[in-house]
Length: 193
Image (cartoon, rainbow, N blue to C red; front, top):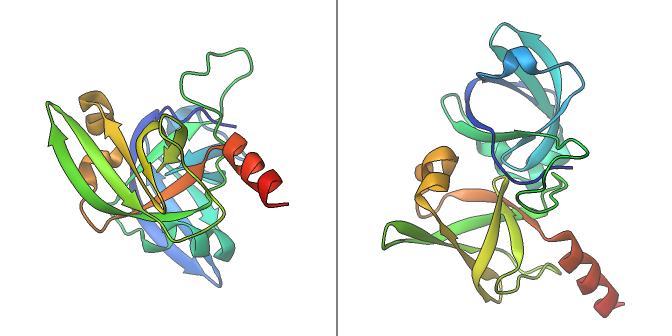
């Protein structure tokens, strides 16, 4: 379980395809604090640390993960948002995030607005829903929806979040991982059944 509050932006230093899996090697300032079998959110995707070597750690994304997320498109030099799993007893500064990405969305508009930024994302039709002032997780970042339309939503990004996540690397056409709010998913399923 995660909060959607990003700890660090890490750099992809290598990627290796092994059969249907993608081995991702990342350079981090907190590698010395990590351990094998630890769960870490990578752009919102919960992946397990499988190896640590000095400042580099590695994770493996299986075919199903690659099919649903933007990790299939990562390359050496890309910047990834990471967050370690939350500790019981800590403050929940974002919202409850599982690290189970529902689908990808495409950035369709970026607008600077009085020092902040409004990002709009479109996603393929699904059972998932958004609501104005509801929670959403974009590339692992806990955000509040400022505008909700069918298969589209917008979020406001403050300058701190813009600088300290990979939002400053996004452009129109960028693919992002989205995890819809868990409560909204349960309610949507209940209504449909």
